[in-house]
Image (cartoon, rainbow over all chains, first blue to last red; front, side, top):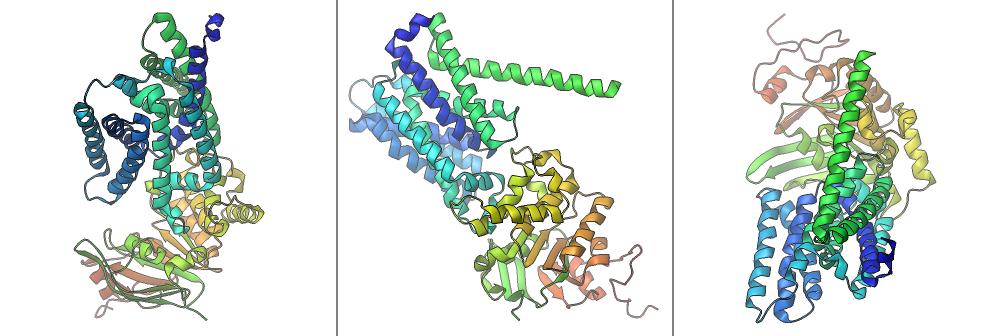
Length: 277
Length: 254
């Protein structure tokens, strides 16, 4: 198995797994504790419109998706708070609108759209060097932003109203957080795909929440969980010759299921043990 | 001396519905407890949000300490209704109380020594300092309420606003809460909104009734007509062991 590490594509895949887990581990904690999984999913799927736009304009789809997803994050954040319809309905509409635009753009593009599927499910085994540097850059931006805004984001996620009362621009902070989420999603799309981004944002953070009540520890644990599980997923997908992205999601879900089940049993035992004594 | 609160002809609406109508209120004394009672949906929370600058009246003026609500935020402590919280949230008592310092700490700055001292003092005031490392969900309802009061106190407020602080507390915990407020009201003006009439009987210094309109007489007694106008039905109030009458005697009866 270790001779696998000599291949540069495996090295790249491992580096991508670590870098993706750092971004998702940190930002995923906010997504989970602020309960904005759905809006994050909306941003991720709507960004498909940006990919289509990139194809249509004949530019690198990554250049289409960056502005597109930032704008859709801002629109979703604003509309979901301000509109008269319920927040989840507003997100649902924008979610499907973005994807539909993507499909139309791809259809209008003459010729064949190569590797369209990788944007949905990713292919961590074919990550180019350039994308690794891009991810490294975004990781640095994320760590920097979270370091600077730690106090603000914690208060925003815990109690928005009180944050406003303290004289902080809550709405702008929220939109800023959504933009960081959009940025995270964008750089990870090609690597892990729209669908795996959501899995990496939610599952490691939900898992670490079962072990700690401290936000910083949650972030660190999520990064570790994400890294270990996605590396295991890559190994498994290589051994079984199945798609890597989907395998990582399956392993993530399986680990979460086992942990939840195991902790449930332990808890029941403790409760019944308490009752006996 | 500047007035703590001065509301002049304040009107608030959501859409087409008028929630507050021609509210006038003047509070001069820098201490004491004002209880605001009224039915659910009578605009009590809206009233507090106007004082906090979270809602803008479409008519009238709001001043706290001679300034707009936005400019007086470092003078106001706020204890919201705590049923809206996610108690599974990964945050400790200490971190919660520190957020009460944000208006002093400022944007993008880390909490300093002064902030930590204020948070510690606030936690000691509510006798919760020994729980500072607990996650917020591992506390009882009464303890949690005291933590939220500590968060408001960490601001070093001159005006403390509490929204239904007694809801969800058992009688013993309510009693403790009122005794705490009784201590706090010596150093700051306290306004407590509640729909629990018996709650206001013992500890308040002034009472107001709110149901779209505000009836306030700068005293601890409410004319029965005001109360009945507020609740829009006859109100019988039986107070237990009350050292004074909340209601004035019915006219005509003995």
